Length: 298
Image (cartoon, helix red, strand yellow):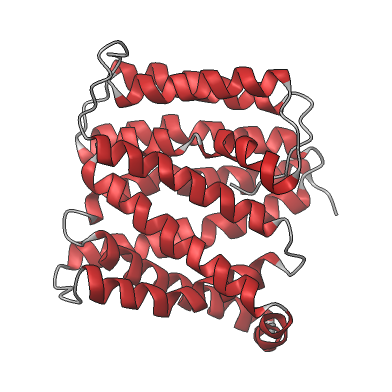
């Protein structure tokens, strides 16, 4: 049954979760390497998701779902969480969180570009405007407003943040071919990703996880970023009478996140970050005008 008020409350719950994760990423990376953070967060998320499926009495559906499309779930797990979060956490490790987070918000613009070769979609005039405005905003953030100098504090960090948008957009394009239940799909992807992330941790880092602060942050990320936020958003979409109005609530998240970064992480928020973020959000809103693109969950 549709219930717009309930949908709004659920969506705001998801937005609240997403508004805190940039702070959790940055604080956790003071104690864990990107691979270590991802390993603990994924392990936490898998435990949470399996617990939810157990409570729902749907645990037995996992194996039949996997057998129908094993290759799909292996590839999905490789893309998200393995590659996406490894790259994203590396960006957060190198950049101020305000830069990494805001640059990552251009993923929906990246999706517009990738949808042309992979989904056969065309780019409308307003999409080109949104693409130009969105990436101009990204440049404002990356150069701290010094556009003409084209000097970046950390070019590799900026490249990683932007590259993560291609992985995330590719993951959603891959999911357009997935007809399985979203919760089952997420659980299978994360379960299959865990051995990959374990190997990545062996190769890129180690399992010397001695700091309780790192554990606390990684568990928080696993529960809220990789678990509860997704479930709340999925429920909000199901209850929504108007999905566009619900989807627009996501634009609250990066602004609230900057407040947390200022007071909990201690980052001084650059004026260029605010200007660039507004440009990106306006670009995303332009894209949504009579949009025929994929309906997204994040």
